[in-house]
Amino acid sequence: MVWQVYWQVSLNGMANRKTNIAGLIAELKVQLRLANNPNMIVFTPLGGNGPVDIVTLNLTTGEYQGYDVKSKNYRKKDYLANDGYERKRIGSLIHRTTTPEQKKLKVKIIYE
Image 1 (cartoon, rainbow, N blue to C red):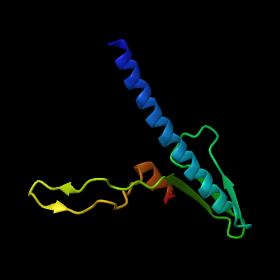
Image 2: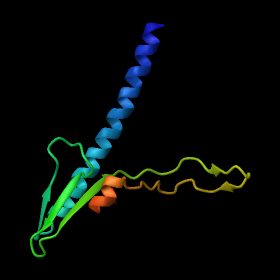
Image 3: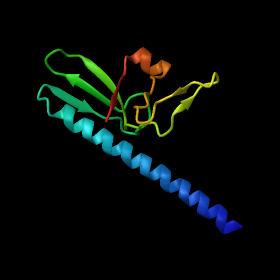
Image 4: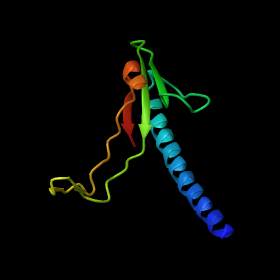
């Protein structure tokens, strides 16, 4: 009985680790793409917590922009509404919304 609980916990830990790795890879790809612009300086938060994943400073305009990086996820099942109408959504991108704090800071979401 105890080993079953341990096994379930370790499986959940593996899933979290895989999604964390996917998120880190997505952030690194975006950082590299933004850093290719010679007029752009790319900053990342030290602790990794907060409303933004990346902040850029455009040296020519002096503008700051915050980004929240999301790894692309696609729907695996169709959606069945309460009225019985089935929406064919398999394979469509799952869009994430910004939080109220991100809206206030005008953070852009980048899907990688």
